[in-house]
Amino acid sequence: MNEGKQTIGNRVGSKPEEYDLLILGSGAAGKLISWTLAKKGMKTAVVERKYVGGSCPNIACLPSKNIIHSANMASYFRRSEEFGITKDKWQIDMPAVRERKRRMVAGLVNLHLDLYKSSGAELVMGTGRFIAPKTIEATATDGAVRVLRGKHVVINTGTRASIDPTPGLREANPLTHIEALELDRVPEHLIVLGGGFVGLELAQAMRRFGSRVTVIDRNERLIHREDEDISSAMRELFRDEGIDVLTGTRIARLKGKSGESVKLTANRGGSEIVLEGSHLLAAAGRTPNTDGIGLELAGVQTASHGYIRVNERLETSAPNVWAGGDCAGSPHFTHISENDFHIIADNILGGHRVTTGRQVPFCLFTDPEFARIGLSETEAKERHVSYRLAKIPLSAVLRARTLTDTRGFMKALVDSASDRILGFSAFGAEAGEVMASVQVAIIAGLPFTALRDAVLTHPTMAEGLIPLFSSLP
Image 1 (spheres, helix red, strand yellow):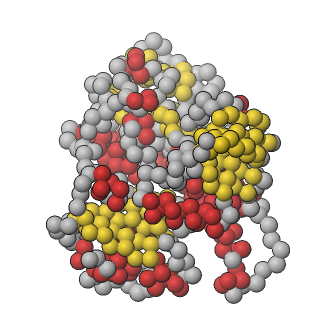
Image 2 (cartoon, helix red, strand yellow):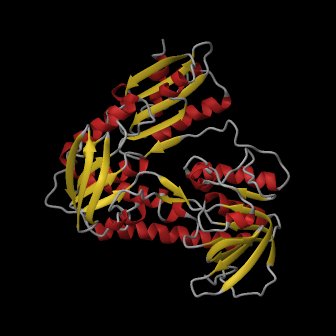
Image 3 (tube, one colour):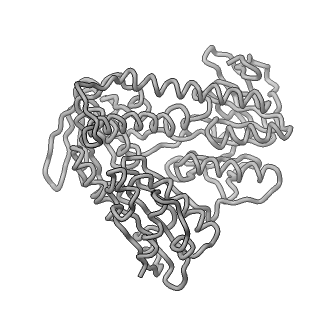
């Protein structure tokens, strides 16, 4: 990493190197803050342990969607005769799938390095930890050490997959999303621990590559925080694709090694069950990367489960020390970390920007997708919000019929006392793209009638918003 200002440096001595801005972790918030404020003339350094640009371009969002796209292509190939295309014998080449992903990641890393160089921000590759307030010791892999101090400090260290204390789980050396995206062969039988976003996306992808897949979740339904019709639709999808789902199941113990053979004993409905597989994927929660980085020496307090305690301005308990992204307890989405960048950067420059009331859109990239913005029915009922419900099957959207992809539905919540849109959910093709149109309407404060009466291009998935809002009682 010696290109431009990328450096690991050597020990400077007991006197720290001084910076206007010092950032620990180069995730979405950290890197964007560094590039933006360095261009404004602030002397800036970013300390990054391993992944240039953070998890999203290296081991999470973008690589996983790359792998998922390959899996979706395999699904289309299996269905090719449905589209009038004959096929002969074929097979999945997992090393080629992995190589496609690696090429994309390499290109993204080079793009990030170019942005560091052009912005003037210094990238320090090494393991960082606080040794005093606003002072970080960075140790490179070759043992070289630098001590850096900033007038302003931002912590952006992210999270990692949780490995709970179930007997035998850690010894089984389970895959996390990182290793799952590096597989060079299709698992014979993948057991997925967790029915959340990561577990469901990778479960479907591996099934489409040819694995036998079993998903185990301790909750009574998949993505249990969402409405029951969403959970039911997801379970039906998995059933139709041949993915076994065991909900309400608690693991008692495990034996064996992932990648060889694993044996899992669990309790389901008061009965003991035993399950054997070849690979194990741990996808049941996240743990913040805040342990062992000296937060106590920096005067930075943590909240529950190790997340850094911040206020609505993303300030920590230490003066001029900020935290953004997953480690600060922000919703675990890259686009939210990017919004944290705007908040922190503006506040460092003297502004007053807060997280209060911000929108949190999200999309689960199964096929079909699940996307939501605003209130779900479950949340509206819990908050005693009165609403009117519009809901249509995806078969009512003509574009879906042209794709032979009519699984799913759209629904929207509209305030009972006004025409204001409270929330939108979609389980279906291009759900994330359609959601964006509704989100813009919510941001603009438009009534649902603006979408109902709009002239939208035919045939598109977004056109489905017309029959959706026309169905409103």
